[in-house]
Length: 464
Image (cartoon, rainbow, N blue to C red; front, side, top):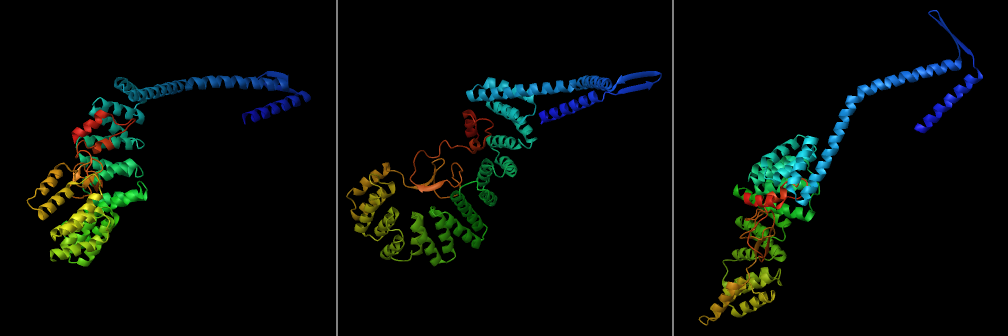
């Protein structure tokens, strides 16, 4: 575009010069006794020279006026470049594990860039590495003043609150963070974890519903979480005497937790309490078909408790037919046969249960075999052999936490050991019982520029 304009200007000048050359003419100027006679070409040239001189003078004057501003801009740009270089070197030092260089570069970046979010993030992180909690706190507060960096500041403050064991403060900050960035996975997961850990089930359900609308977690996982929340809300409703709502929530929980027998057992127990025995039977039958469990059989037997022992065998068989090939079905049949003193039937069903786990006989089956031998062959010492095997047999299945490996005596939405939400499943325990549990602070600690270092993770452990 500039080239086109230059060509046009040159063309105009050429045409003008050609016109003056063709029509030279003359100009006479009389002013204050002065008379000037000259040609048109000379006058035009003189005017052009005067205009050029005036333009040069004006440009020099304007440049002199702009000089302080240009100098300030140069200094700002230089400080910015040096500050960005310090940031780069500080991050590189963090990656290399050189804390002293990282700290010096972070301080230099903050000095050069002022309240720059990246500089504040770097200095906060290095302050944490040096154990300067107060220094990190100041930077987090400063980050809150900028709407673009407020989320990072909140994340840092949440980590501080959790390390101090102040869950209430962390929850309030997490609510602010979620309102600020409702589509951020971390904001949802942190808020949801704190709400469930505080047993704020209604608030957690609202948060989960909001996250589901934004598709922040898979549909199956969201449904399972929703079922766990409905289970806990059912317990709350029962405690306040709202039986109708408790049953409704328990039914929803059972539907959303097909793999958790405790949800169906709770639903059936509430129906039995209301005298709705047929409905309870249907619930137990459907649950046994999906996930056989000793608690379901115990409730089933409670429905037929008035029947004689032999009739209880047939009563047990009614439920067993809904999942006849499951190992738990074989165990239930064996227990009913033992109660009815049908030793052969009991031995056959126990054999079926043991065949389901070849080479491994769980403690529960060892004890049932000991009971069978003691009942069928009292005083022969066969029971003692099975009791000895039970001492070293693998532990029976229980509600094991997938997060910490802890065994819980009953299914609840929260693990009793690590407070993980919806982490319990019915299976044999594997690994140590609830030992070095990852604290919530480790998952929400401020990953300012790099992942949290090991010393901060251990600090989170000691805070718990």
